[in-house]
Image 1 (cartoon, protein in one colour):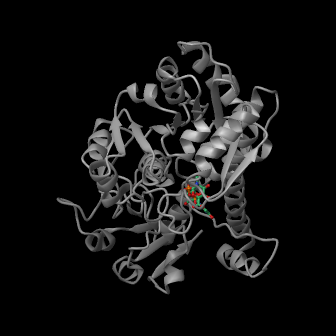
Image 2: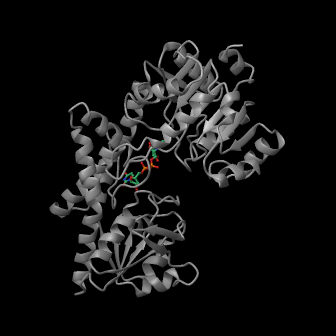
Image 3: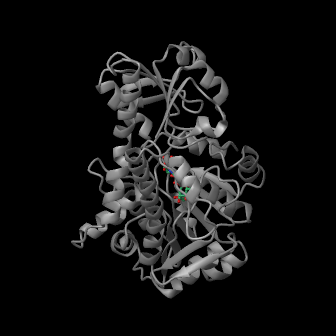
Amino acid sequence: MTIHSRIQTREAVVSVVGLGYVGLPLAALFAGAGFRVHGIDTDDARVRAVNEGRSYIRDVPDAAVERLALRERRLTAAAGYDAVARSDAVIVCVPTPLSKTRAPDVSHVADAAERISPRLRAGALVVLESTMYPGSTEEFLLPLLLAGARTKLEPGRNLFLAFSPERVDPGQGEWTIANTPKLIGGVTPACTEAASALYGSVIQRVHPVSSPRAAETAKLLENTFRATNIALANEMALICDRLGLDVWEVIEAAGTKPFGFMPFYPGPGLGGHCIPVDPQYLAWKLRTLDYTARFIQLAEDINFSMPQHVVGKIADALNEDAKPLRGSRVLILGVAYKPDVSDTRESPALELRRLLAAKGAEVSYHDPHVPAVRHEGLALRSVGTEGQPTLKDALQASDCAVIVTDHTTYDWHSIAAAGQLFVDTRNALRKAGATPSKLITL
Ligand code: SAJ
């Protein structure tokens, strides 16, 4: 039976490598559609959770994993790759971060490919979902799969290979994997057809493109679009500062235009595992072609200058109270990289803490989603946790409170009443109608 007919009958077996915020929802989606799914993850705690019917990803309810793994027995997990030998399709959803030199770190993809290839069945489909640089599926992944295979594989004949970028936005209620259009770029037309058949069986709309490179680059454009527009909003904050204007008022005014404008907002910098990272994959590839992606470079320069800009705002605010930064108690509110998440990857709050501490400020933080975080070798604990002051006491004791991430659970009125001086990088207090005694915004 061809992979198409096995997909039609739901007899196709799917392996998902990497059970994180992309892989686990994807595995649950295929298992929920009637496929047999094998999850593969190096994290034993994740493997155990799935096999015990528990979830650790907010968008996948425990009840779903319990039903799929324990009752319907269509979802299992393992640390090893043996299930690949029994799979018609293998979907790779492993992290693709940046190295210390901010070059692509493709080690997880390489490791997965080297462990998949000797187990790969002839006629199987492999799809890479991890965000990668243009050309990587054909130039990096394909050779690894061919080199390690036990039989001679030929793309489009007895190996189907495609790139299909993940578009998962954790906590985003409206857009799910099932209803977000899915790009599919196969190494050959037959590869595109096979991948489209698989995803088309669980996702409402698939959008085939002419090559993996087109799909890889479309994904990078999506997130480069965000990074550059966020940088424009950040530069508007620097511009309005010099014009003596309220950048929030200016953006709100521009946002009344019903066409041709999309508001982005300034902030303390750019956090997360996507937006600060993905554009660098594109810039890196272009450097190998002797081209400088100038918008990406400029956006990175501006976005990464924002923590320093916030330090200047804090120093100016304390200066008004004749307080030097050195020795002042500064409380950071919100260290997660965006509201209502616990992820602190590339969080500007941590860079802000480092800069403030380097100038001698006594820095503490509060985050309802991040009770503790390690940074620069320090084990930091949130105020409001055991053995720490309460948030109210920390606010009352602070010389300056800095709003960095505006979690929706914050009670801005009681926060404004408890502190005396605020630097608000998200305009959260004014949006809530809270009026502290002293307020500086970006
Ligand atoms: N940020 C600003 N100003 C803005 C928007 C964001 O400073 O106007 C900051 C955030 O505080 C955060 C960083 O930028 O530190 C990234 O924010 P984000 O809203 O882009 O959130 P992410 O990183 O979770 O981006 C994800 C992406 N999803 C995928 O890559 C699959 C992105 O493509 C989504 O568009 C985005 O979620 C979303 O729309 O929420």
